[in-house]
Length: 426
Image 1 (spheres, helix red, strand yellow):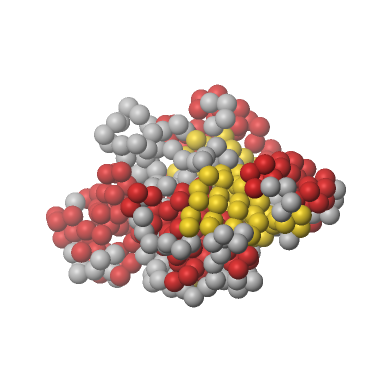
Image 2: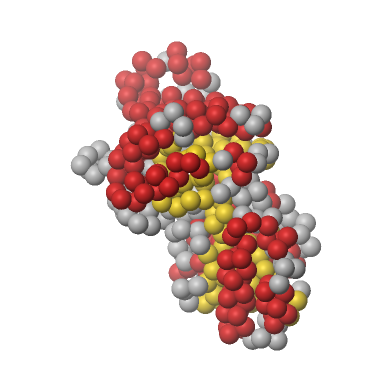
């Protein structure tokens, strides 16, 4: 650890540039140093200036392939992105975790009581308490710390701001009290436990795993308790493309039933074969019995099952393409995945509001601008919200201008794939 006044002094120089270059683009390092220094000053205002501190970071994530597959124990390709949650942290002897996130009140969690608090459901305190409880339950050490955090992971963007926060807390505990011995995979599982059991959201593991591991990561959820993780080595910076996330401005407020129906209909198909999830149903057996399934579960359920099986194959194809350095093949599968989500999984717009289709409009514009050159697909849960596009650099200015003219000045976020997950930066 290092005194905060010295930390700011060193940030003003070049001593930490190499550490920052591990997770940020070279051209962004100067801005990140300003961001870090401002956060150190905020920490001093909150917790005192005569403190020794460290700086931690955890990225947001993007789903690359495997749309609506994880909840039925399928396969996913995801990646960490260069937007992140950052914390300036100092140990304390109070046995209390205090976290002050920019724009929110301070959260204080007493580690002498790590039980589930119903009153904390849906609040950040529950995530902190849940992560600490999971560390303790697994036999790891925990202890108090004070932290000031800031995040540019866009809330509601499908980039998983909550998972980044959970992984950030887990990464802090890992290094402060466990000498960094807890694996990135286990930190992701701990984060999921906190969100499921303490926060009260029955999420899958994809978000936390991508945030914790970083880079491109292929995940097989056949056994969710023991997911198979394959980090795919690919230098995204060398492919001359930008990753764009477009916020179409759709409202998720009334879509809970739509999201639940995707999972429910896939599981309804599985139930016809005596299984709880589609991954446990042999594909050939399903295909021999489509007529029976149509009669009992309905046509949309059949189409969603077809999407599930083919999406698992696409994940394998994409991981192989990246491993072979074949970005053109990778983009072709992105487009194929997007059309499957649109036509078969049917999570691009809700039939409840057929006149409201912002995601559809954005996808149509992508095809017009990027056809034959880039790639595009719905991003995340769908029905509203965001799309993902891989845009050649020579088309980026045109793409941003045309998209922002329709969806607003700040609707297009240009991102990069971050090679590392949750880390102690300094």
